[in-house]
Image: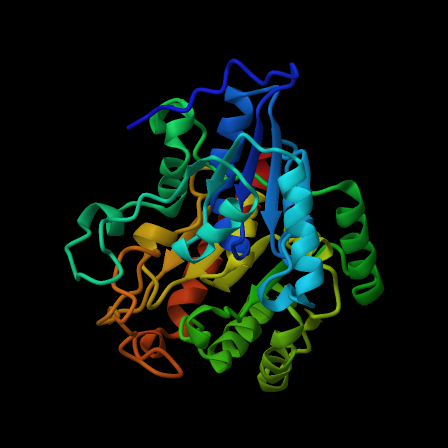
Length: 376
């Protein structure tokens, strides 16, 4: 494989200019951060620009290694060909030396349109989209490693030599806004544990979501056992789901779905004693913030998608007693025509009781209480 060492810089004396095609959802954006940090360490004088969707732009602006964040107006951000062409012309004028394309092959046209001669791509198995090959290594390897391999031509150190944990650092304004939101909702109740819950997850049409009635039962149980404050999180589209959970609960939770900017929601997660959620971007954000978490996994493959925390024993996964018959792997792990075995609610997740999740949550809350008592 040809190495693209950029140590010599440019003719104008500046460091190399690298465009990161990070047109990804929140969780996958977090999975790319070990690679971004490794690139910054390897090329400290480089200009790193991230091309993102508007949803993840605030998140990427929190990454110190990234110098510039540009929103590409495609998909839900598309508002006419004029803005798209202006964005592409702007990127072309920046004369990037290399593009690192973390996306699927559908976005190869972007780096070509920007006139970037050197490009690196995801290392999918050959004809992965057509031939049902074994894909053993791909299916058993975490997404963070796959994203790192995307940039391995850039003379990065071996994977074993880098910090493989996604790290998320929030601005002080986001944490202050979250504290102010909590004070307005929970006056004089700051001594009680705060538990964040996310019952959503857009990918797979909601197939990876544990039934909302189970979340309601779990929330009531944790409220009664720990005198906990429960906050339901999510985006605007998940507001009806949160309202459904709240209506099924005996104790009133705090609804924070759709009412807060992304960074304020992440500030709420950072303030939590525990986070419980499906396999989604907010679960991975909790892990990257160092918050204890319980991850509920059903059809998605934990080997590819399990959260990576900052601390040992920071979180745990709960999986159904009956495994999904057709697990969903990271892009490239199965053909494009393979479909999940279920519709609506995953049959495997439907076998997971609140008891199993509650036991795991209790263990993490007890562990956190012991750590606080010992002053650690």
